[in-house]
Amino acid sequence: MGSLAVSAVVRDPAGRYLLVLRSASPERGRWTLPGGRVEPGETLHDALVREVREETGLGVRVVAEVGTLERAAPDGTLFEIHCFTTEPLDGVFAAGSDAAGLRWATAGELRTLNVTRGLLDSLRQWHQL
Image (cartoon, rainbow, N blue to C red; front, side):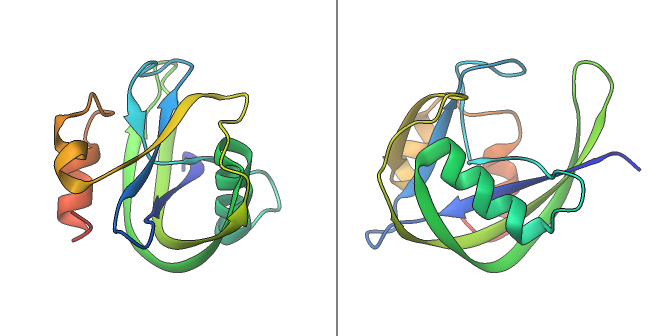
């Protein structure tokens, strides 16, 4: 089995998606959903809340798991990524040290941005776009 990771579909009351600009490889300079690795002993939900807070400054409430996918990192590590819908709760909207930027994007804007490989297809498959 590969490494576990999580990602969050965070939408504001207007329905816009929260996106993080990747600051590191792979896919540096592309927009994606907030998320990251699950640490040893951490639940998927705890990891998701931690990663969103670290990358965006926002607290979230986990709503539901919407899908899972596998991605190979450049070093060959296989990641099993669990994606959840969430609701923003509180916090100060600010990019963390591992994010080059943050933005809210409408569905139309999302389709025109330089996003990570497979993001749009996954969101469509999970009925999130």
